[in-house]
Image (cartoon, rainbow, N blue to C red; front, side, top):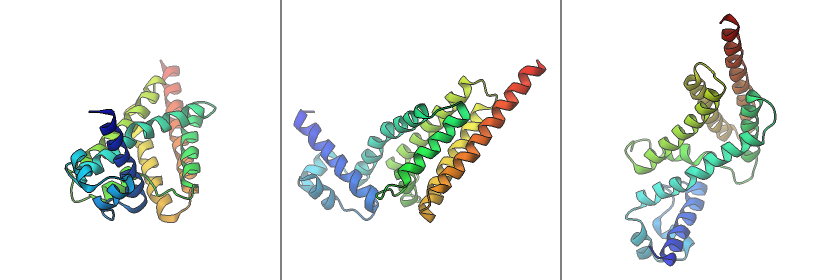
Length: 200
């Protein structure tokens, strides 16, 4: 693909990302995406065979940046493992306080496409959430927590549950409350690890 073609494709993804996140995939036409990107609809269809493919590309483009943000917020937090997990939630709460925040794009897309489980965007969204869960599991395994997989699942449920409730009530403090619960879970898991080592 030529440099110009790559740039045009990226402009289309950027335009779709802005519109899909602000208004929802169903509410946005391909004409609107093409217009925002400054190209013709024919050009859009040259790069993407369908709106479904464009929606998948929109989420795929968010995948690594979103995971990197989680990792960055965790690393920037001070204290031990529990405090850093809590810091991740506090960072999410700060993001949720921004005027343009409209929740998790992956979860919102899953709601829009709930009747289309095989949709490519649904598969990308599910894979992204599994990547976050796997990253959390790796953190807990590094601390020799016995049920690292179970704890990672609990934390991802708190994250995504908080996304939903914060969006519903427009109150980011729910994210902070979820962070308190997550820190308590991690603290308890670390305590069980310590107790087990004493018995040995």
